[in-house]
Each structure stands twice: as C-alpha cells, then as structure tokens.
Amino acid sequence: MLMTGATPVIELEGAAFGYEDRTIVSDLDLTVRRGEVVAVLGPNGSGKSTLVKGLLGLSELHAGSARVLGHEVGSPGARAGIGYVPQRHTLASAVRATAAEIVTMGRTVRTPWWAPWRIRDAAGRDLVHESLSVVGLADLATHDVATLSGGQQRRVLIARALASRADVFLMDEPTAGVDRGHQAVLVAVMRRLVERGATLIIVTHELDALAEIVTRTIVVRGGGIRQDCAPGELAAGEEAHTHHSGEEAPPPSTVPTTIITSTGGHR
Ligand SMILES: Nc1ncnc2c1ncn2[C@@H]1O[C@H](COP(=O)(O)OP(=O)(O)OP(=O)(O)O)[C@@H](O)[C@H]1O
Image (tube, rainbow, N blue to C red; front, side, top):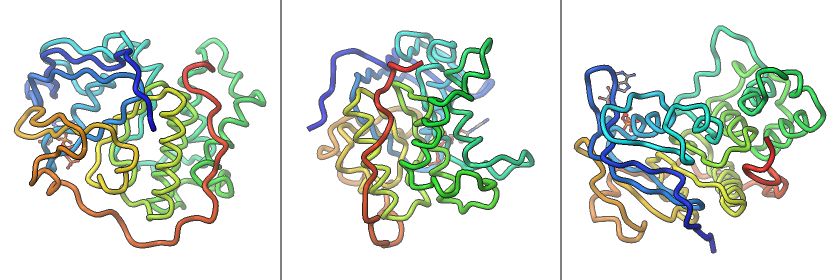
C-alpha cells in the first residue's frame, strides 16, 4: 500500500492562475501531501494544464498564495524540486537532439550553473541511461528524437523528468499516445517513485490506466476545483471526462526494477 506522509508539498490558498489579464482558474484551495498521487480530471479547456503550469510558474498567479515544497511557485527553490512532463511532445523541433541529450536536460536542472561539466561524470551518464532504460528506450538513446514516434517521444519526456530526481512530478497526460504495454511500465515506474517519497500530480483523461496508483482525484471545471475526493467517490458523470486508454497491446515481458535510487537525496 502506498503511504502518504504529513508534509505538505503543494499549498494553494485562494490561488488563481491565468495568462495576462485572463484568469482561467480561481479560488483554488488545495493541500497535497508527500506521497499522494493526485489525478487532475476535467473537460477540455477547463484549466487543468493552467493549474499545473501555475505550480511551475509558467502561468501567472493572479490571486492568493501558491507554494511548492515551501517555496513560492516559480522560484528557483520550487522549480528545482519539480520534474515536469509537458502535455505536448514538441521534441521534433528545429534543434536536433538525441533522446539521451533530451534526458540530460532534465539532469541539468540539478547541475550547478558553475559546474555544468558535472553532467559528464559517470554518475550523470548512468542516470541518463537508467532513466531511458526504465521507459524502455535504452536502444534508442542515440537516435534523433525527431525520428521517434509520438509515444516514444512522450516516454523520452518522462525519462527526462525521472533524470531530474525531483520530489514532485507534474505530469500532463503522461499516458496519452502510449500503448497499453508501456503504460503498465510507466505505472510501475510511478509506483516506485511514490514508494521512494515522491508526490505525483497527473493530468489525465485516462484514469483507468492509472487507477492502481491514484490516491485522490480532483475535478477542474467551470474555473475552479469542483470535486476533491478519493477515486472511488468520484461523482457519476465526472468520469465522462476520461476515456479508456489506447489500443490493446501485449504487456512487456519484464517490468524494469532498476530506477532512480531515491528522490530528493541526490542533487
Ligand atoms: N498560453 C496561453 N495564453 C492564453 N490562454 C491560454 C494559454 N494556454 C491556455 N490558455 C487558455 O486557457 C484555457 C484552459 O486551457 P488549459 O490548457 O489549461 O485546459 P485543459 O483543461 O488542460 O485542456 P485539455 O484537456 O484540452 O488539455 C483555454 O481557454 C485556453 O485557451
């Protein structure tokens, strides 16, 4: 059973997030404690990503207060503790990069600006390799990400978040476009992270894929949080915002057991 601790890692009090003069979500009161796995549900355009981006400082705090790991959102202290899997896989950009280089960027967040060469040390390389292995992409480490499929690119982004060794993982639709077999791998990875003290906030339309790890569901609709409950207590109708995930595919023969030896302890 997953244990949740008492330490609040996310604290929103009357918070509102938006862009320039447009507030998207408001009156947010939310305390998430260490070890919780929170699924953020709601219809398209309701503000789920805006809420997650608010925790990263990527959307603006229009009212109230918002802290991550005790730091104001957007501050270096808050950002350093967060691993982020963005919604869209925009990896196939004009900048050519291999899968391993993208994952290395996650590690760089933890690398002191005055010592960027440290990523070249053996431990850093091992971590990048380990993160790619965990999501089943070790063989594609040296491939240009532009040549990878959408689902593979999404797994590269997850490996990048893993390499950051964050305490809080904000994942925006991490299972979208990922086949059933690899979804099972990702869920196993998430479980390991939580067992090691991480907290997960997961925006999803695929609650069924994550059902075995989610401990709490919040529903964002009409500009605010309309439900905050255990998954089994979700009001009838709210599951309409979720759908059953992906194509049937055989599960991988082995679920990787080596991952990220701890969270938070290796800077
Ligand atoms: N960078 C931005 N600047 C201005 N408005 C934005 C920006 N990003 C999102 N919005 C607006 O904020 C609203 C909420 O969008 P958001 O992406 O947070 O919804 P969502 O619940 O995550 O949707 P989906 O389920 O489709 O991913 C939308 O009306 C959208 O147009």
